[in-house]
Image (cartoon, rainbow, N blue to C red; front, side):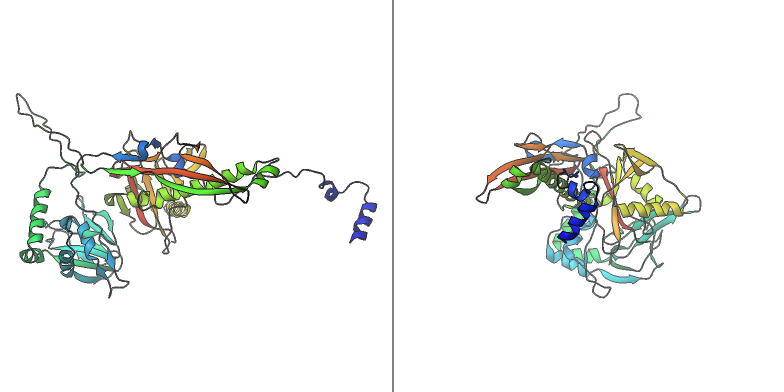
Length: 459
């Protein structure tokens, strides 16, 4: 091998590139990472100071009626069963905490399997039962004013029908094979006669329903209008929620370790500590965005009000579904969706020969619908059944929207809400830096955040 290299050197008339590189400084890039994303959520949320590491959301008094979502156990039609404590999520049973009473109520429900296309409830007939949907999707339709059929949107797992004893206002049809549980209303008086606790609860529920409230469930502010002369004006006040929610700042932390020898000898032409810190902060910000979406306490996917959770009509995200999501709130600033959900929406638009416009956000071209940008975010999870969610947000304190929370001016602050604190050098000459990011997110009013759930992307 040595003889071959010597022969090549003798044959060349000038210095070879291999030899020249021994004396040259290599042109190099800074360290890159594949996991970095645009982090549109962090960039699009307005960030508000949370002094004292907490932010209290004060609202008008709202008469809570339960979320309406019941949970079920079992893995098949034969084993499906109601989880009794979750019956307290129904408006009719909201506030009951007695496990034995909820178990007794659950035992009165009758399980039924429905074929696809089977009518579960017929418009105009007496609503003589409370129906829980354990599995499947149910469509709701009613006769329109001009002879057409109006689509009221679907219901799915955990939803219910028959809150009142008035005739069914729509026809409920099984869009897929369904499993339901039904409680005949005639069973309630019989059960109440055996349980004084249930009888007292039903009496309180009837009284609560009669309290004046607006269409959002808030305590009504009485106002007179259209009168003449010296009419007696109503006396009123705006009542407040006595138990407002407080959002505390969460933290994402890590310890960055760099050997002092690396920092001393290998800092030319790039500062090793600086780039180690840059990559660490990028990973921390990625985790921060993930938590703002998926954390059970503050994550947007868990913070949406159940009245703002919609289901797709047919599975994939259609323009009809996006319109329904958009009209649930004013001033929707942007949609947030997994890139595969955006692709699925594009396919549905193409199938209908629709070509949505694009929008410019921070100099970037993104998809849009009705002028509202659709921002990609791969931190919205995909389920094993190839379904995901699409989020719609109104943002800002002024518009009573969704806001991000942080605290600036913290010790050793490196970026707003993020600190880098030197922790010293250990006996192995390794330097340590504590990197901490403090954050949270608050939904000021329920309709600021909406979610289109069970969006199929595998069609």
